[in-house]
Image (cartoon, rainbow, N blue to C red):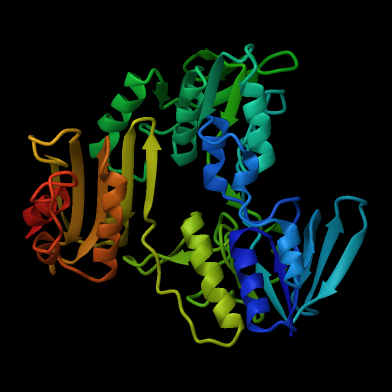
Length: 443
């Protein structure tokens, strides 16, 4: 059996490695269009901000290590066409322009997603960036360290944009975030908007919402960003407005895609076309609460899908039941975390919910360094089963979201979580944990 994999990052190399471990004689070929494999993309903002000063630490496993395990890894090979009937893949060698065509028995599409570049005037000016690769991060950091870069404008107030705000604050830059929506971080409910706004404001970050970027001005390099409400100085501009799956080469294959190009897969990562599978940021994944196939490009999801698909291709009857979109973010000094569904998603799915919102201390008043933690929980209005959680505070949100995710995955009710036998000691928490207080309000 010959397995051909498109994409050499988390999902693709998880599959490749699993296949070679299971069968040292397995034929595994990987086409990767860049020079990198298996790097920690989530660590890129912290390299830019100087938390980590060694880009090499972001490289989890280098190409030579994969080749040593017998994987036919071809870097700088960009796939341009897939013939599902003939079971062939055509790629261009970006180093010399030559085309190569390979056959396959099974094809794994793990091509990831690329940052969306909106069609705005001036996007090609020097100083305008997106963040995807280590090379991107190295270029951004190098430019940001120049004294001439004083003002940074970030377009988009999602995870990456907000994490990058911290990086540029650390570098002493004046930071402005422009967001087209009415508030930042739309995966969180409005109850948390003021906490996010306060975190940005007290750290000197200017956030402008409900503004649409119209142009980036400058002679040869960025000098300002123009919106429908004003103009902002910017010697550096970061575009962080979402990602789009890299699946253009699947045109005419018959593979079912979402509108954004994500490959629709089942719980074994099978697409709608036999012998074609997909995993990672280019594929859908099942929402454990709603049961729907959704686009959730998270590193955790890519690794889970790669692990399961590797087992499926080695003959195991493994399934991925679904995920909750569990995620967390530090907005300079504020921790924000969420899992499951939010109010909007519950409404769209037609799920009747009850909600509880509370703010409580993470430690007793007699022990230092406690802080307020805001917790919002959702449960099914009829049976009390937990469906979602959102937390925010100076500390304690990230460390508790896993508890909430585990409770939702296990099908626990709010009453069960409220009375769960959690540990207690003053250096770590309160006798009644804030999450349990919120759960008790739902009983």
